[in-house]
Image (cartoon, rainbow, N blue to C red):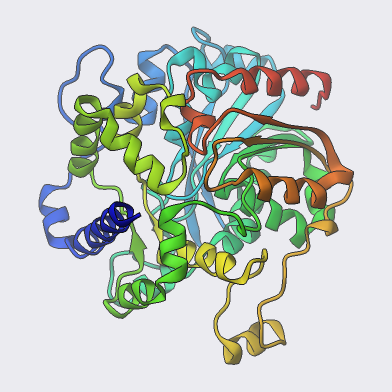
Length: 417
């Protein structure tokens, strides 16, 4: 426990140091392309380059939310070796993949090709779209606000999963349906991705049911009463940490920096036990379940950045022991919600939605007990629930991706167009 506290303090000091290093970052800034690479140096490749190197069709799309954020979405419309044109001509069923906190769309192609969820789905005949949450390395743009400007940054970074669920989900879904000409799509989400989807469902269940055929909930995160993530527990208990970060004018947490990601990647390749410790601090009870050969690749793309408010919101949920909206303090809560305490997010409002829920027995963040509670809230909508021997990040990096084979089988049995 003492070592964990020291490790966490070191991580948080690193956050402060890197978040303040704007001038150094501008001086060293490099594109995702990086240096000349060998045949399998995926840790330094961009999403597009990984797709190209493995011969998958690829597109990039820019999507504007109602509150002015420009989101980047990637599309893999077909199987390995198919052209974009031939892929689109087949009018395949559409599925949207949504990553979790501090992550990006990259996460779904980090594992070995035949174990990476996005490639697995593409090869099974799906038109695969991958979104990037506001504020991550691919979506640090706004119609009016500059995320790095002293005048704008407080406004730009003023979001958590609520705003993602209210604005990002709507923008992504409506854009994709318009672009593909489809009436409905499927959504598979991981971690905070599930949180924003559940908020979207409770916020406007009718809108959701008209557009989303089926929802795959991977490592669901809602109530965090049993959360074992050392990082989130530390932020929840030591409130001075977040307060200090805010007082320093830091609004962004774990920003993606090319050279730092490369250092993480090299360390993970050389000493994977260090990366196992990093995952243990955040989310995974047994990192050995994960594909050790791809840890370095994953850390070349992670973390991808988020807002301080996003992490603070989850810390609040841990303290409150309930799934609730953001707590601004009693005065602002009265203005925003009409009550002194933040409202509970009522998941029993979700009706008429097909949901596949998969939880990990070794997941410290989306804890198995909390996922059992989540199952009880969603029970009228569930068409499948099961536990697999997975940690939180194992849903993306496991050696054994049997759960994805089961998901694809369930999608086939519940078709949509």
